[in-house]
Image (tube, rainbow, N blue to C red; front, side, top):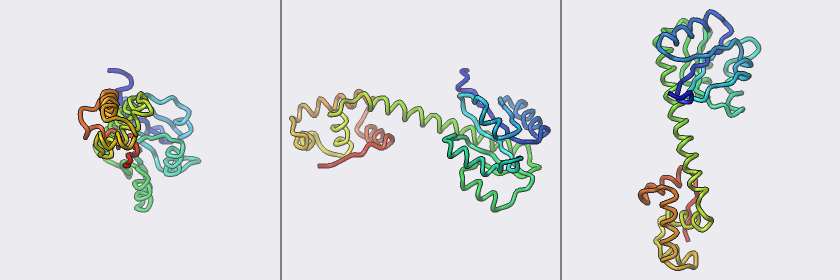
Length: 209
């Protein structure tokens, strides 16, 4: 198993006993973890490449967990967050969940509830990373197209026929067929429907005459 495929759970809590307890629980089910006393320590540390999530205390010295959630988003750090707190209330919970938190657990919580939330968060991150990888591969394929092939692709996914595209571009139908073939091969698309889905994922604008 490569390091990029191993999951890591990050724990940020100023209570050493809580950090140790959570890490012990995670170790008992075979999950790798790293813990930090403050958000600043977490931000300075080198993070692993694989799927991850963050178990974050709401009330921390110097910074509120909800504020740190916003800071992470503004810094472009996309990581699923599970909040834990001994002083939760409904408005706080609503705010956290609206900002994308996976779960909001009030201490004392059941070990299984925390583990369920962590597995949900890791699954979410794993899926998100796969989507990013797939999109990056699609972008690489699209970048290999010539300017004319990209133009043909935009017209093809808009639903135009070869002869309509030829008329639009002022070229022959046979030339359009050749360009279209190159597009399908370079994009590794098995069908027109698949090519349309690829264009949608890449947010490539289609156009009509």
